[in-house]
Amino acid sequence: MITIKTEEEIKLMRKAGEIVGLTHHYLENYIKPGITTKKLNDLARKFILDHDATPSFEGLYGFPGTICISINEEVVHGIPSKRKLKEGDIITLDIGACYKGYHGDSAWTYKVGKVSSDKEYLLEHTEKALYEGLKAVKPGNRIGDIGYNVSAYASKHNLGVVRELVGHGVGSSVHEDPDVPNYGRQHTGPLLEEGMVIAIEPMLNLGTSEIYMLNDDWTIVTADNKPSAHFEHTVLVTKHGYEILTKR
Ligand code: MG
Ligand code: MG
Image (cartoon, rainbow, N blue to C red; front, side):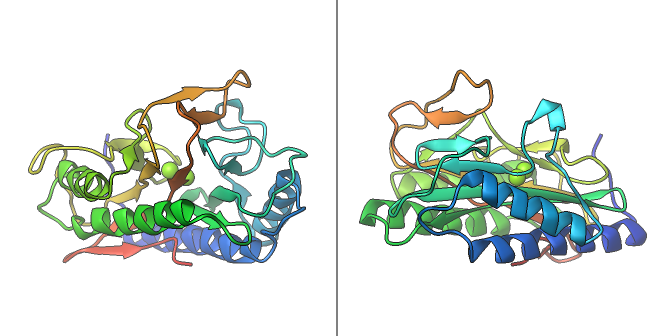
């Protein structure tokens, strides 16, 4: 069921989104060669709790971390560990926070020091693909318009679109209806209405769109081991367009 949020719910979701944005901003300073992903995870945990919120992903479906941290060919759901970041890595932090019962969800891919030009290219165009998707968000458009924009932009730039993982509605659960795929046909799918909140999250690969899951039963990686990037915002559908709730 797709829910339309009340004014009161929207206020709480703005706050949840703000905390997610602040957590990203805070962690960005720590993304340097030598730091472990566990350390980043623990900093995120303390920061979210210190802001009167709880981490949305901790224990969600049994996830053994607070935030998802995915490096290079890892697409999503990387588990924080003793692994140290290296110069030239790219790292995706996928952060969720719950404030008074309402969630915000945002992923961003960062550079560790200086990265190769193909990684630069991947990051630049995955972020732009997110904004292409956002352009389709307004009442009267449909979910398929968002995915169409994302995949059209991705194929124009020769990037693989992950299809098995999708964006989603956000509210009192971090994952609600509707699914928001990064592919689609224009004028198809659920209608966008004022008051809906959705997470749009292109996951684009430098090579193949094919992925598989590692033996840890969580980490999703690209089938050809080429790098993957992930940019996500939670947005509110407004009267004439959208408002980003997870501003950075
Ligand atoms: Mg996310
Ligand atoms: Mg999400």
